[in-house]
Length: 300
Image (cartoon, rainbow, N blue to C red; front, side):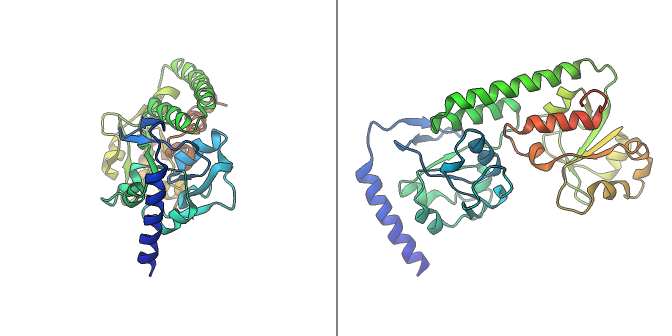
């Protein structure tokens, strides 16, 4: 019955989409390079990943957001009555009934090997994709793009200018540091240890604040062994793991890790998971927090 209802809804939407299509509607390329015909008005937005949700709220569009993914529940500023959808398996019937003007999606939604929005796109619902940016410049580009399609370009430019000013201030502090501390940043706990190297915005952040990543020569996302970390002997350990109890104490209690300088000198710090993992304007908060954790006397 649910599938039959879905087909009926899709047929109705497709009929209106075909008859309502106007050659004067603007065409753009989304951040994946797909050609997209934008609706004339965008008043009903669905966001399917937290970073896009954060950008939309910052652009002043919270009242136009009608649904978000289930991981966006903690995004500050979203209306409490929005509909929540599954990030990895969004329900097409629910989305159709919400009648969105546009869905701002992400490559993460396609991680299962299929595009969960393919039927919706075929029915005439506009879906644009914003990738998970791995650089600060990429984050700027995401903000600009979302600002352009939602006609909030002026606000997008303002956000980026403010970001650049803050980042430059932190960079100037970082450039004064001559003896850079060696840092290990953990983004997945034992036994499946995971960190990052070059090609990630977190690597850029460490460089900005004047720190050396002990695994900077590795790829942007890497599995790492406990032995490799013991050998690297970082002076500071950072973690943004927020799904286990007391991640700092868990790190300190690992076998043999009391020989690591960071553990022996009590330099193990938690960094807010949201600001340090979501590619949005809020990375400036992560920069300040990371800088303060490593050099508290410089980043107040």
